[in-house]
Length: 253
Image 1 (tube, rainbow, N blue to C red):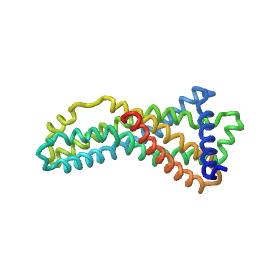
Image 2: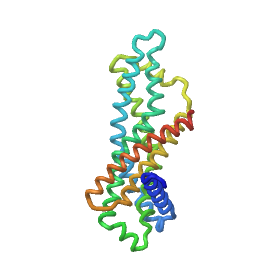
Image 3: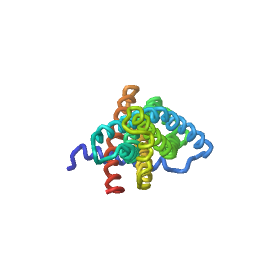
Image 4: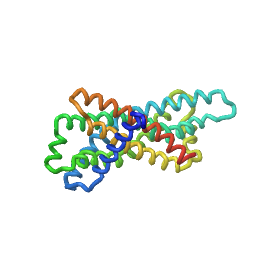
């Protein structure tokens, strides 16, 4: 006999993949799909631009200052390596991974609560009664919107974080603007950008589909919507951390 938690895991995993199978079908109306898609672009994408830009600027500044402090007093490592280290840290780890975890709290809770509210108010049952594929209607526009907009968010984060590092470096006097720009122009492996984009697409899929699963299969009332949102954020963040290790080992190992 398998332990109970193992049985529950396989049951939930099976329901998750069944939900995805229902979601990835041809929309019954492409006109409705595109309308929902553009709405999700606004709700999930453009509405996240502000927090991504704000956090990226200050985290990039903090990364640059920490790099400068670690290199301070070194007679071997020149000052422009502050910019080089900031660039590598932002592109490889901060923007694709940390931003995805932050978006779990914003987008994940929004997706779980919105779909969960539709479940407890029996709107999903109403869609099913009318012959509408509720999983396709609710999930596919969100997945498509996030997959198409996530690279824009990540590239915005990278540029803003590097700009924040430049501002912090020259205002604190750790290095001049010319030194920082020289460090940014040091040899760069372009695959790192590809690596960041691959991670962003994988994480975008996770931070939409996992919360959607928790919201779609919710049982109970309004209080359970809050619990589902919390569980969705915790679960999707954990999976992103695990996938980050797997992708790093696979693509860079």
